[in-house]
Length: 328
Image (tube, rainbow, N blue to C red):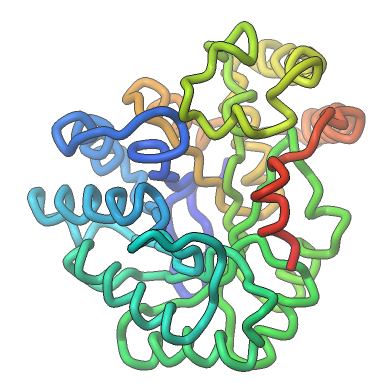
């Protein structure tokens, strides 16, 4: 039963909340009024580790959270993480970690939120900008009081180690779920543990696979602007093969007497990580939060491990364009 996560020198409630889908990536762009019920429920439950990024609808997601937090005067209740490193204004695009970008974007983040974020990441690593330039710039923002903690997202173990030798890196955000365990084999998880860097697991429900009511019967059911239309795992025959794999986890959840999402989140928490599932629905948020009450026995952890090790999903986890952005 994992109810808190040790994030560096503080305890934060687990699981957290990935806010991207409120504005970006899943075919939704909610107004403050539309998002309010979910965010109010998150506050009520105590689900207060919230994750956003500048690139989520070019600042719209950050402003949505900032407007909500100011309206309800709950700044003291939430831990806010955001990210820069992907250009998204004035017709620009692509990954950049230039010091000028970092300084400009964190100032924009602070303006949209109305306060300084607790944690600020480089969203993706720019191989053209030496870490000797980007990491000091990020750390200077921390020293100037523009954020308390700094982190990297979807970098290689080698990059994480080198960055941490330049300035203390507090967090790594990377994909991890019972459906995607790549980072168990590329040394990223082990490196983070060795260096006492907190591991924040995004897509802990496999981009929506690991739920009981997966609302899609075919790849054609995704909204036109749903990013999963670009992800090989969700397209063609891969869609149907991968959907079948999930059935094994559903069987274990049913036997346990909990939902598929709850057992999936309990599994990620059991690996010592902070899962940050996202949703636009109050009911799903409550269900995810209920994973705190799912205690997996040694036998159940072993059974999950057996399923996970056998479940090798078909297809890449990103389309070609975004695949070039990860692993540096």
